[in-house]
Each structure stands twice: as structure tokens, then as C-alpha cells.
Image (cartoon, rainbow, N blue to C red; front, side, top):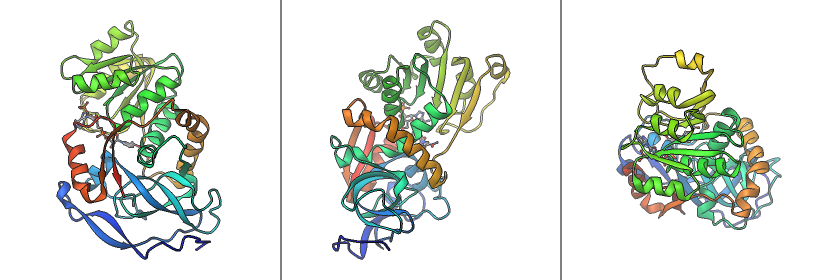
Length: 337
Ligand SMILES: NC(=O)c1ccc[n+]([C@@H]2O[C@H](COP(=O)([O-])OP(=O)(O)OC[C@H]3O[C@@H](n4cnc5c(N)ncnc54)[C@H](OP(=O)(O)O)[C@@H]3O)[C@@H](O)[C@H]2O)c1
């Protein structure tokens, strides 16, 4: 291992794993050895860890960790660097970082690759910082890199009040786009409007295709960020503008659909998608550098900020997951260590 100046690192730590697959009660706090950073890696004493829907899927047994990733839950952390592996020189020991991790976030200590970490702006608490990486990496790479959202274009975000949605609204507005969201309650729609969404559609009451056409003078949305799938897929084709880009980041309803592909051709649509977790350290590092250049200054100035739903101590990890399962949250749920 490289230099470890912090002699207060213990040998063991608390960590959350799923013992079996199922509801929040399968989550158990166990004792594990503190991991050791390898080449280019940092050891972070975790102050807070974000809870994400993929963690729920992992708990339910439908989203196993990729090869090499720890079985400990948690995809994003904020904390202080207490040790560095060989050639990890980007940050000094003691630096406050927020990092995307391939797993292992719900623990007192976690390993991150230094290139997948970002410095925590002074105006963000550790709780807020831990709510940044997963949604900011996801939104940047899907909305801006794959979707190619341009100033003046219209972005339709399904699940506008989600962790992902609340980030997408703010970033799209900050970069000069118009934003339309769908959400499942009036309260969620209000929250999206308060964040800057130009139109919020309660999809339980209003057909989103008709509402998007009305809001865009029949032109449709230039980019659609979809986590729902199922019958949203043909409806997205209808709601999209000519040369529109539809970016699939999940299939909360279904990954299967009956689709008439004529609109894909007639409107010259691009239907794409991506997953973040299995991507290589180098690919995540590229996204991190783009965020550092384009988004970190906005975070530091308070122009965008993670929307915090609730914070739970690690001991209450089951309650944190139960809150996400219930689906009433707006923005991010975070664990504190
Ligand atoms: N591809 C990637 O790289 C990537 C990375 C991170 C996350 N994700 C995915 O992005 C999605 C959002 O993640 P998150 O952490 O932001 O989750 P979240 O906060 O729990 O948000 C899920 C949202 O989806 C809406 N929704 C619509 N239809 C739904 C359905 N049938 N079941 C459940 N929710 C439904 C919910 O609100 P209402 O229905 O009430 O409006 C809620 O706002 C997840 O599916 C996650 O797996 C993908």
C-alpha cells in the first residue's frame, strides 16, 4: 500500500449486505475487514452514502454486482481520503471527495478509483455530496453525451421527481434547454416545477403524448430520458420531435413492448441507452472529467444542487430502503455513517 498517514484506521468496519433476496429486512449490518486500496485507488472514510434504485434491485436479487465488485451495497459515497494505493496522487490525504464506486458504499470505509472521484465543493455538506455521483454521472452521459441535448431544445424526463429526474431537470435548465417532466402525483409535479421544469405532467391524470405535443406546438421533445419502458416506448416515439433522441436508462415497467417502428424511420429517431455500473474505470473517468469541467463549477456556485429527500443513519438502512420502495420520496435518500 502507499502512504497511510492516518493511523486511526481500524481493521474492521460496519458494512451492509443483502442476506438473501427480498424486502428491506434482508439488509444486514455485518463486520468486514477494511479494504486496502490498490493501484490508483483511494480509501475513503465514508461520511455519507447515497441510496439508489439500483441498490433496491440488487437487494431484490435482480441486479447482482458485476465481477470484481464488492457484495456490499452502495454505488456512491462522500468522505475523507485516509489512504492511497500506489500511484494514487491526484488528491492529498484528508481531501473531501465524492466518488462513484462499483459497490461497497454502505460501509465505514470504501475504495474508489481516484479518477472516479471529484472534489467536494465547499458549499456542499457530506450528505449532499454523497447524493451527487450516481445521478450526475448518469444524467451527463445519457442526456448530454448520448442524447446530445442542445440549448433551446426540449427535454422530456420521465420520473421527474426521482433522484435522476431532479438532477436532469436542473442540469438541462442550467444548459439552456426547455424541460417537460412526467410524475405520479400533484406534489411531485409541484416539486419539479419548483426546480425549474417548464411543464409537469401528472401521468396518472393526463396522457403525456398529448401534453407534450400541446407544450411544444406539436413539434415534440428533442430528447427523452426514459426509465419506465413498456408501453412508454411506442408513446415516446409519438412524443418525440423529428431527429429526436430517446435514451433508455431503465425499464421500471418492462423491457418488452409492442412497437410500430415506422415512426423511428419517418421521424429519423435515435433510440439508445446505457448502463453505468458495468462500465470500465477509464470510461467512468472520462465522464468524471467532463463533469469536473462542465458541472462542478455550477455545483460550487449553487446553480445546481442535489435535492435531498431524507437522511437515515446506517443502522436504519432498512427504513431507507422502505422509503424508496414506497416511492413517495422526492430527490435523494442518503445514509450517514
Ligand atoms: N442506466 C443507468 O446508468 C442508470 C444509472 C442510475 C439509475 N438508473 C435507473 O434510473 C431509475 C431512477 O433511479 P433513481 O435512483 O433516481 O430512483 P428513484 O428516485 O426511486 O426514482 C424512480 C422514479 O420512477 C418513477 N416511476 C415511474 N414508473 C414507475 C414504476 N413502474 N415503478 C417505480 N417507479 C416508477 C417514480 O415516481 P412516480 O411514478 O411517482 O412519478 C420515481 O420517481 C432507476 O430505474 C434506476 O435503476 C439507471
